[in-house]
Image (cartoon, rainbow, N blue to C red):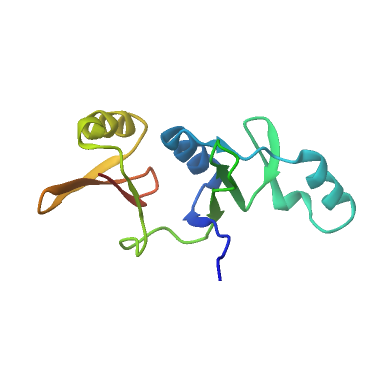
Length: 141
């Protein structure tokens, strides 16, 4: 059996973190469906407390997704959680950008708020582990 899936990242500020990852990956922030949100509130399925305004747009408070620009449906969802990140991720993304681009990408991402954590090597392959602005690890290989 083949499954459709999305990756979900726990977050203290889903909308800001989604903006960061969209910028980093060159993906698109999923557009808000403001009319649908207002319909859900009017019908009693949601309240104003379930929403917030982000960059002048009404959005769901609990999460924000980013989409791959090719329209393939690949999606990363950033979900609001009450607790801060406290330990190493059990799953992380490995961005295969190539040895010749690794240092420049590290410089770009740290300028956007990432933090270099460490460098690793296994045989001829090496990578740089970084953390996004909320501390979620990812690798540049």
